[in-house]
Amino acid sequence: MAESHSPGQSTRHSWRLRSGAVAGSLTLLLGLAGIIAAVPAQAAATAGSTWKVVSTPNPAGAEISGLSGVSCTSAHACTAVGSETASASSPGAPLAERWTGSRWRVQSTPAPKGSASSNLYGVSCASARSCAAVGTAFYTKGHRNVNLAEAWNGTTWRVQAVPNLGDGALYAVSCTSAKACTGVGFYDNKTGLPTAVAERWNGFAWHTQAIRHPVKRTWLFGVSCSTARACIAVGYQNSGTGDAQPLTEAWNGTTWHVHSVPLPKGAPGGALSAVSCTSPGACTATGSNFGGTAPTLAERWNGTRWRVQATPNPANFQTSFGEVSLDGVSCTSTTACTASGEYSPGGLADYFIEAWNGSSWRLVTTPFPVHFVSGALLGIACAPGRCTAVGAWSGDVPGQQTLGLAN
Image 1 (cartoon, rainbow, N blue to C red):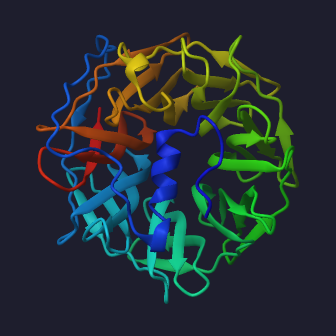
Image 2: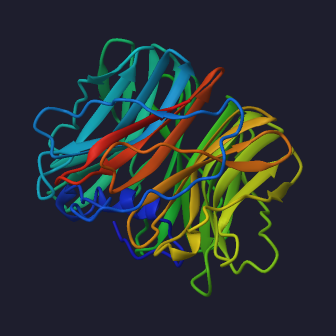
């Protein structure tokens, strides 16, 4: 899968793409072990939003582990997915962990038969006993990446057959029931151009849906379905001239259609990484804009149009080597959303969290593991009473570990 896609590609997207790239090896992105980074000061905590680091296990023998996505059906039931590998030069393998209300436990997760490497990027649970996870699998034969989907039935994970249109991956999935899931991503078409894709699970099989492509280069990285007939997918598009532009598409139960998305005044471009909908007329999407003074981006869908919301930025965001982006978002109501952010101050990956209270976004105090050097939050999910964020981090010893936060 090609990696040189578009100006302004966020570090989260880069991490996800590289994790399934050369021969399926999982590339260590999150830091230069042995270089201790100062923990950045965050704004004062919002009331009721105290976060803490939660212990997440790492598979035995894995030098590199990371969690890319998480889904919670209650404060006591969450599933997170990602990948693990024995070393930076070893093939990646799928990783799934389950929060039982008191601890995280590693689940046995199969790899597709014949694959050289595989990774899970997104997960959605319709209930504690029904989850779907998506990602990519690499096959040495043909040297190609193909879509990967796995299902949890409350007891085991199993690989599902999913169509492929070309060298590609699925990056996010949203399920409203065990018989209704939508997965999105992109693939390289016959001319080598990245092309957005949507796949639909009907309880029996995955099917590719016809989706609109406003320009020749389109990517989808997030999706949220509030009902089986109402989904919003987000990403970005690039005509090949100038900066990338945000892309949102809506599913009405019959067809996908493109929404117009505004940008903050003066921003030359932007990208959306994640979306969360509490109803067909209430969605929040987050990502980054390419303006230099306020790079984080949040937009609100009211059922008719998207509107830009003002978002804060970490105090040291201008030292970031990469995009400053809100790469995950989860809403429990129209007045309660939480977003996880990622940037690279001084060249080392770092993270932050913001909260929406119905009128404004605010930075909240974010904890870090002891001996933290670099890290990223790659997924967030909120259930009534608790939010969970997951990712990966590196410390002052070699390797990369799973990361979990909760409030």
